[in-house]
Length: 420
Image (cartoon, rainbow, N blue to C red; front, side, top):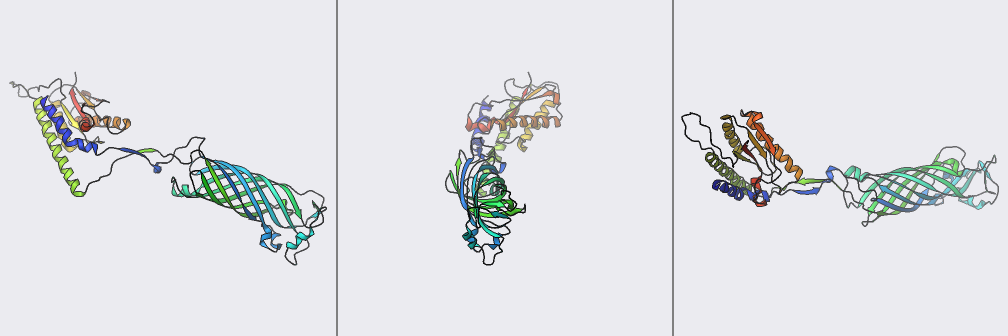
């Protein structure tokens, strides 16, 4: 037991400092993807206001561009389901100004002076008009910045592409002529339209809760809405400024991964440490050999191959490992070869037990180390001629010794005992 205590003390002094210097830390790693947040997080409210310009076949007859600019506003409520995908719904107001074909007639409440906004020499069948619409919309949204560049918490600028459709009703209309709107055949004009839309929202973060945005949008709607007889589509590009208020958590969680410490020594210091570790390995191998010789002394008999005498309380041998490793080191392979020679000289069965210290690493990592270490020793012994049916590979979740975390290095081992 005196030599065992000496071995423990030597291992603690020569290797213990290495264990303390190699503590594993755990951090979030965005490269591994993102988890979904709770449903109550990542909601937002948006309000926008701006102006659009109407483009339809007759609008080129309007004299000044300002007479084709109408106001726009909307209010939306939405949610981000991932750092890339979101949806929003809301209500909107749109004002349209421009010219139209007089394929319908005006029968009451005229404002002939409105035609003064047309170009000189405009055809008589062209009429200036103004109409307002309100409605509802729904959009699907994609954060292009997070998609192409990866999610980054605290990023100031994000480019968000969206597309959707709205349903709008004409609530007010006025134009030049001599009355209220009717088609020439007597049919009332249409007052509802479906409006497909796409846009690019440029958002800028100003605080944890608030973003401002510049929204570049293009809306299409049926020309039947503004009095033009053909069922085709008009286009209205628009620019809007807005504000977003974020509700609940707006950041996203990344998976937790283990991070090993980086090498923090110079080349010279590293070489010195390697030399010291090599000397420590040699010292440990020497102590193990002495221990082995002590435990395997035999009583002289006439038999040329006397059976070794093994202490029932001490293991036949102990194979040690560096932190986080399960491969047998070159020095420890000599111990395994010596153990195989002993086993091949008798017909006893043996118990192999895998150990890992419980001061470093996670339970999952340590369980894998114990299993890999004991299976590695068993495989090495069988390759050296020991029958696999004579070897019982086990693992132990406790610590091999009770010397504490400063001596954790001697708890990373595989012990070999004679089966009882």
